Length: 179
Image (cartoon, rainbow, N blue to C red; front, side, top):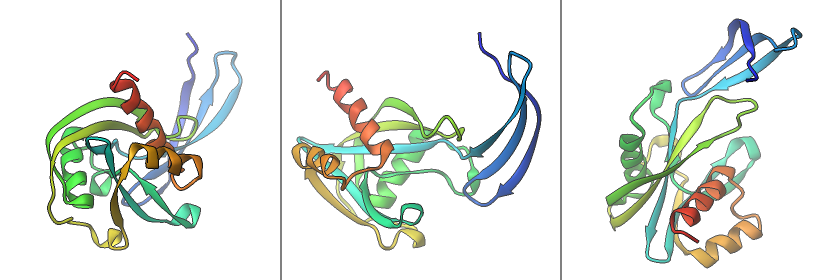
């Protein structure tokens, strides 16, 4: 088994959403190195589906400098660890106004395992009841809409959907459906 020993760890940055740490490590061959690691809490990503339609949200993503369509997703405030199933219910309502009669966990994703410890659980939300979104102040520019699976796949092909978590979650959905 390949194991890396952590020799020391220090926090180099922190805010409400994440911490960055630098770890001094020793590899199995005895050589030393460092890792910079972004720590964020577990997130929930929700695929709201009604028949052949998927519900997406669009918002401005500062790090890439553009608006992006993606599945609703989020973490708890202040880096809190919250039960992902509870988080999924809350994020779905907050971002879309939808309430799911059924919420099934269909998989797990790692955001960027070469640099981040964050993982996410993917939920399929069905038996949906619409209502008003309850967005946070930072989500006021968010838009939402329904798209057929054909439209969703076309949006991936033409770059309108480039969020890796949404594309990977869609793969989990296809596997869940047995396609």
